[in-house]
Length: 235
Image (tube, rainbow, N blue to C red):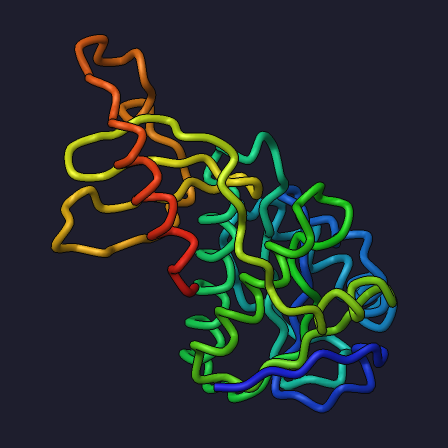
């Protein structure tokens, strides 16, 4: 639906619900907006977190809002960045999708929340912000993102840069695979009649060169054509 980015204190944002990012063991994330929610919720909120004990990465659950100035409170466990090839970007997208679906099912129309995984989790921040705003724009909710630092706020205003190709990996079936500089891989259709390009959020072993030692190399002119297709592709 829509989203805005603000540097306000999360407690001053008018919304149907707030989102508290938590660790797997239900300790609240050490982000300024999350600490503000924890402090305002007081011992009731801390007791609620201790009672639940565990939340899987990518999951979201509704909890009692305690003393917070919201009708609803959602707890969400965001992923950490490991190697860039462990489904982290897909996990973050699913985290937002699960959260937004839960909020809609609860009858919410607006959320106040931090940018998930954008602080202290080693996520590449442009990717974390791009995923957040992209998923919010596709949802039926009005989302207010709280920038926990001035740097995050400034970064949210910068147009998203399309990742650049680092290297050609190999081809599998009808697609060539290129490694990108943001931890993703570009899949480019080899068939001339199809100009399809998309980014895949994980690297499957079957794409690796060497799995099939009989796989012939693509001609250099074909690689140039595929790179040009990627460069012309608009995200």
